[in-house]
Image (cartoon, rainbow, N blue to C red):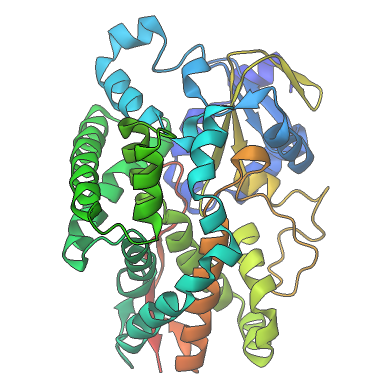
Length: 410
């Protein structure tokens, strides 16, 4: 894209526009057709819209996740002085696996990685099935209700709480903390949002510190025991342990949006819903298509550790690159008929979970919850229909999901 066109493009205005947040795909298609990689001269940020360009970048050793290396980041001395609140928030949130480059990333990720693979999660399958059945059976029949409040938010929250042995009485408080912390992924935050997120972070870490100590006498053999073991043997210090626990407990938004966005895609494509009901063996491919077609996040970030050529664009060391998921997950260079929702689509190597060493550690858990949750819904209710207009989040730029999904089931 030439410099004049780049200068005329208001990227941040687009990314925060409510109409774009409700339906980003036409604009992303237009921009991707111009070029797979764009440079925003206003912010110095590179936007990656091509599938090939993003997947290569995600695996490139020249690209990492430590935003302290971004020359214009919260860690920049000038920005630290100008915006001390951002520095306080991000520096206290920084030390966890999702934000680390090698070797720190591998050291922290190794504590939980095996347990979060499909085989390691098998032991938790009965718990996930029980939680899904309980929530599904409680849905009101023949009356309008909000699927997000009554199902999509509840199941991932309960599963996460059980995995980390947090008592049910904490559900509402943990949800409030999560709601404040999810805004950190937006890149752009208001001072009030930063203040709220920092308060939530401090309170959440304080709670997790007490929770670990309360479990020390009888740690069991689950995720709490893994955290205590890593802390006690020096694999992680306390700050890393607490930040990773906060990230893992609150990192269920992908599953929340998968339930909401995925069900809406089925309801808006009744022939695909009918195909899935007629052949439940398609559920696995249907879930992959839900994540490709209507991904639950807008951004995947990378920071250049050293110079990296993305496509034919040089990304200099210290630069921020943002992969726009809705663009590369519908790239016609990689996907046939990319704007078509097809529950039988194969192959379907979408990139919602990123790639390379930083591929989402919770991907297998999200898939397992979706498989169990959608199975339970389809088994229990022969009729699921929209009961009003869905409402997309327009108060956040990264999480792409539904605030409300009015339904009626029979």
